[in-house]
Length: 119
Image (tube, rainbow, N blue to C red):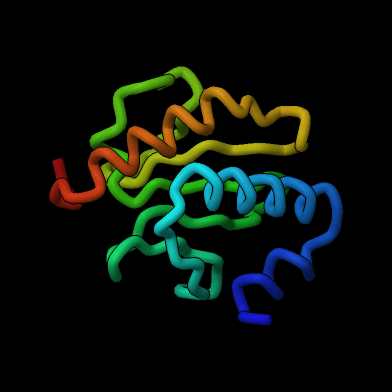
């Protein structure tokens, strides 16, 4: 098992369940992603370029989009938290995940994967 999978499986509930669900949706929606362990967290890459990451921080799971500044859909769900480029979705429970919003943003992030990091 790779370190990214260990990171996910070692988390206590409800974080483990959230991370496993996000992992499943990401890998079904974006089939050419490669799960790595970078910066001490699970990081998805596409053709060697960062795509998104999963991180437990405090009492939530952060799904961060590497080129998030280019995202336009569902801005009411997207967290900027004072960041200029990275955008994220935050979840405190499995029930809080809206799969439609999640899939829309994953597809949009994939569509801008070749854009520059900064907008």
